Length: 304
Length: 297
Image (cartoon, rainbow over all chains, first blue to last red):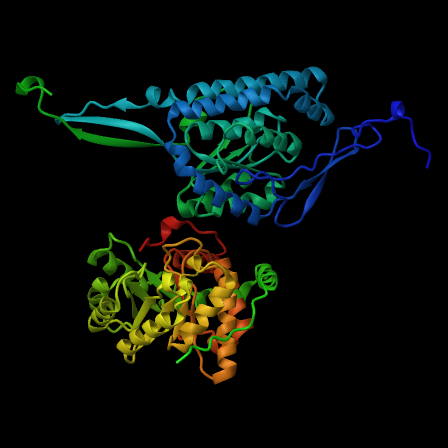
């Protein structure tokens, strides 16, 4: 073979040698392949092969729940301000990757302007929820008026492990809306990405992996809703199920299965454009009320 | 008398590869149910903490007898394992349930005291009603090469045990390498051990598959030489069902069916029981379980 002159040498990243990304799952801070070994083909908007995507099984879901459970307490125990810093860090990391996400969205059929808009909205959404991390408790907790000599507080506490399925309507804001509000509230999350947009979901996992989010706090699966509904709803260690844009019949089945372990269930209809909403944090909080005895005051003539 | 210590040289790479293969085995459906129940029946439910109280022991004894009453057809665990001070409490609460009482003795976990105190410790446990004694060897003496000392100590404790079964804890995490594990195993067996046990659970690493395989092979070689069976107890660090099933596969394929009973094989564990129960309920109902629905102790 003739030797090329050095001036003719091409870099390894030339168009002759494309290096395709393998889209894998995101479980416990790592990127494993599906335990089932199954995959489905993701085509771009023109019908060309884009990637093979993991078709998650109930075992992948189970592994995710184990990871989420072991991460939950320490995530809950982190100071609210620290959670806020970490969520803001997600926005910082995301913002650096505009080209990656915009290109992926264009491949999936977004126009250039629509993908730009979706990306900007996604970053804004993360920043919006980062702000709520250390505020929702102050805004939504309460000192209740009671007749006896007690302070009576009601404070929100995280529900626990949230199993959620992201909206199919948007490539990025949908999955952010499924992940960020629960973790702001101290929950840990197992999320199934939109069937239509698994690539952006896994790229978002790469953002999470570099954002100081502890392993197991967010676990991202790709695959088919129909296969995983019953497992999401029946796993006894899941505390809440949140399904975006569920069919009525599916919602009914999920509700029935979830009743066994008294899970919280929420079925949301997504709207575009996606906007922030603190209810998404508060719907995954339990209210703890504490009675704290105090000395008699006012009329009884004694002080604190 | 000069001790004759015999064992085959250890092929460490071979041992590791063999263990790696055990870990690839997949046990499903009926065989899994059978395996999970067998593992459950082999557990020495253990509490060995400075903070143990009679109340804690009572809770654990209740758990030993009523693993998960909602699921019928479960065995009990093999034994509870406690400090000598707690044996009387355990005896009181276990009554005639058939669950045995194992007591650690001989200045567990370090073994750093003299023989008289070790003998007194053992006697206290037996007088209080222990069925089995888990002794620790003097690892310092063993590592110094004073094998006669270790041998004589084990023999003395065995004598003190009378007809009670003696488990000898090698504390393999302190022995350095697999050659020493094999040597200590053979030493303990020759000195009269009814069981050999990997670890106290206080030192890392505790039980590993590699160490357990070496010990099982020593038991196998001894059986071929003498026709006598010796029991095996890996302890510490075995906390999930899959790993427990892999240990059982290793046991079956190294020693055979005769050892697949709690008379000859035990798991020293505390959190393993709940994981086995979770898996058993999952196999029965098809639904993955949560720790919230199982008694902690």
